Every structure is written in structure tokens, then in C-alpha cells.
Length: 371
Image (cartoon, rainbow, N blue to C red):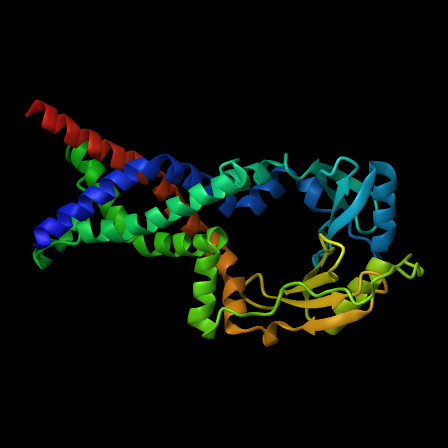
């Protein structure tokens, strides 16, 4: 009975692997690139991310925005990021007259634009689009999400198929016979390193599912919080009509207030609402934490600049805190370079799985034909 079940699992492992192999190859390859996205981009485009000289005082954010709107026909500002690092450039993202988002790198000391790029045509934006959507928008997201689910099954079923019947065979399953035939080396490489990377790949796959399926994210919240209900990430703007007050230092005031409310060392990100109803969200990431992506939030009236609601990181539910951990866990950035290197290695191995799996299948087909 157990032998029949294992055979069925093996058949599912084979055919699901063949069906999703190309997508897994693509997602794993783009994922391996995204692990070191920041490092690669900063190495290729250093002038976009760092200033040549750090000055003694910075320009007002609003002055930088005025210059961008004037010289680049930007109609709406979407996001502003001011970094704690004194040598880091300011990032401003805005939409032009055609509705396309442009990313600007600004020297915070002089207000000079050091470079700009269309967000959608940026190399790593394309890589991320392939990774999450296969350049196919919502349909692509469904395809990659389903493939991720299949991959979770592939990992678990692969562990079942790898597991030796007797303990004395365990040593054999844990090594690759490099001097054996190609067929044997290919099999050992696929199964043995599949075992060694099982837990890491499972974590990457499961965290990836939170971006693909709302039911998976809700399930995570339910397990941690006991409920799927959580505060809305948006807060409605209390002022309905613009009083046309002086806004010459509007964004600088939001930055200063947020920096004062949360007096720790951190990067500040100002997010403008995408609609006409909600308020401005300002996040301050706490760089004093050993784990990245831990931010507190302040909501501001988009017309008056008055703070509406303050949400310190400490007030977040366990589910919200876990969600904040998902990104650094998924990308391997949770403990810096050691976990990034580990994530890169297992992603590269994941790239080989569809290839070695295909060779295993072709070997079995050839054996049947010769028989």
C-alpha cells in the first residue's frame, strides 16, 4: 500500500514538475537577481545613489520638488524617500503628463537632479515584473501563484521520495557520487541538494504566496492574531476641500514632524494617496533594529499637513509585525549578507531543479524505449 502511494506521489511530482518547470526556472532565476538588487544597481549606477560630497545643510524637500516639476513636466508627486545616510541621494517619484512614473535621484544638499529613469523601464523593475507577473499583469500573477503552490507540493513530495526506507541507506542519500555516470550524478544532485535546501526553499515559497493569494495572507493573520480583521492601511482625509494655505514648506514639515515623533535613526518615506479620499502616509524605518523593514507610521492631512493618526511599530498586531518580516525573509535580507548569500545559493539551485528533473524524465523515457 505504501509503495503504491509513493508511486502516485512520484507520478504527481514528475508531471507537475514538467508542467511548471519553465515558470519555476524563470521565477527562481529572476529571484536570484533580486536578492542583490540594491547592491548590483548601486554598483552599476553609483552616481544615482550617492553624492560626491556631503554638505553641511540640506535643501528643503519642497524646493527639490518645485525644480523637478518645472524642468521635467511632472504633474503629481507619488513618493519621496529621504535617507539617514548623509551620502545617500534623495529619491522622488512622480507621474509625468502621460501618466508614466519617473524616478528622480536628487542631491539633497544642492537640489540638483543627478539622474532620472522611467520606473517601468528600469532593469530591476522589469526583472520584478517577470518574477511576479511574467510580464502578463494579473493573469501572470495567477500563473506564478499557482506555480508557487505546485512548488510547495514538489518540495514536500520530493522529501517523501528522497526519504530512505532504512536508516543504513541515509548516508548514501546525503552524498553525491561525483565519479558515477552522468545519469547518477544528475539524480544525486537533484535529490541530495534538494534535501539540503528543502527548508530554505519552502520558506521562500511560502512567503512568496502572501503576494499571490489574499486567502493565504488572511490565513497567516488568523493563525497569528486569531482573526483576519486588521486596521486599514489607509486613513480617510478629514479635510474635504483644499483651503489653499501656504505650502512652500509642506513636505519638509511632514518630514520634520515624523522625525520628531519617532526620534530614532531611520529612513523616511512620504507616500501620497493614489485616490482623492485618503490622507498622506509617512513611514519611518527604524535602522536601530537588527532586522530591516520595521517602520512606524504617521498619517497627515494632505491639505493642512496636520497629523491625523500615529501608529508606532510597537502598537502593531503580531500579524502586522509578521507581515513586515515577510519581505526580508523572502529576499534573504533579514540578517544582512549571510542570509542574502544563502538565499542566492538556494535560488540558483532552484534554477537547476527543472533542468535536472527534465534529464531524469528523459533518462526514464530512453530506458523504456530501449526495453
